[in-house]
Length: 580
Ligand SMILES: O=P(O)(O)OC[C@H]1O[C@H](O)[C@H](O)[C@@H](O)[C@@H]1O
Image (tube, rainbow, N blue to C red; front, side, top):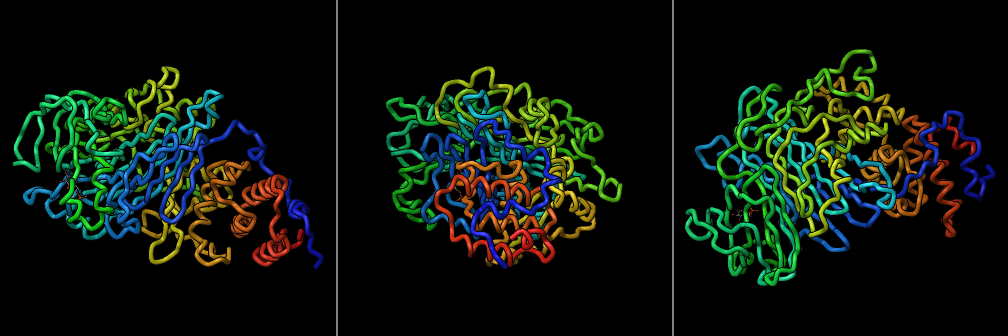
């Protein structure tokens, strides 16, 4: 067969009749982008600010703002899921420290199980409101979920409660916001503690002051385990420090230099405890995963949470929450009133039976925290509500109870009033389906929101039936995705596939190309995948992007080899080989 040598060959002979209007190149300015690869989710704003979150522990391991890394991670930290990350922002739940033996958490390891369980990535949302210059808020929110069904058997045995956590990490132009939403999915109340064990980078610990703790009562775990009152207005760290500051009156604990130069503000909302930790010289030496040995100089842990006593969370959707972390949430929408932008029915017209544990973000919310710069923003309207009004909400939403908020961010001007209404709240994942990309022994789990994916991709629409399998405990394993033939590419390819579906499919520009690290071969992989799934929309979109890429690129690849690859990789009977 005569094979064309020009990129334009791939645009001929393909069925363009069904090309959906969604693919029209309506560029609103650079958007935040998200990449899911190797058990890690990376989000990058058009400004270059970025955040990286491991699925293991939903641990934030990097947050770069204006080129500066704010998160400390030890050089010897294990990032392979073999132990909790030494550094980053490990999520502590349901117990802080060594759990008391006489408590329901007594059989759990130090700091509970959230930091050493693999979470599910629930998806991203962004305002899609365009570039900063166009008035957009340029932030992206990543949601992660953990429930009793995806913790280890040992942990489940040690703490047999039915719970649901949604952890939201929002990267904004002014800072990072982290929020933990705790839900009781079972029949009996449980007690928990939670904490975001944040390791913040500092240039030199001996020149740092921690402000905002003056006159606060704290438990000194290094000294005597007893209660003391903070006498310094700016706490200086001159040796090992391990203190639990309780019921702090001020919203903000800030890190500055001793001569007052601001570094970071860590702001709480409706959550009142903070742990300050630095292991200093001897303890650092004794911790094999904390290296180099002088690393203690370069971080301080300012850990916001609820660790003084226990939060009791009653079960059931009518529960308004007990204890301080859950005080006063507005009534959530009732199930029947939730907004669905797509039909909740399965392909056979039956309402899919949903497991309660999949309905994160509902009524029993306690212990959220969020990180954001300087001035805590009290949201009055959710961003997704605003987005919904514009007709482009990425997910359906439920109102979020007012929960504790931790704000963390570099010192920056207060958020202008006009932007305040865009601060997001947790989403209600009212109807999700899970896809297990089968790469044993650790298949990657994608939890996708029906409304988003089923409308955008025939492939996902066809798989909606999967939702109905869930109650029977069957796995929704993706098979046949090994067709892109380079070994080991299945997992990243499916991640790309999902990412491309989210981002309205590869509206190609140089930024996106860089971020997805797309080369021609990976476009072809994506095309072959789409072709295998019968996903014409995606296939067309890939071709669009490919054409743009080839137009933009002055440096074409070894075209013949790539065409051979595409030709032999595509299904028999597909239009592509005929086009080629
Ligand atoms: O070594 P880890 O289990 O990660 O704990 C590290 C530290 O976490 C907290 O800050 C506790 O207050 C400390 O007592 C503990 O040493």
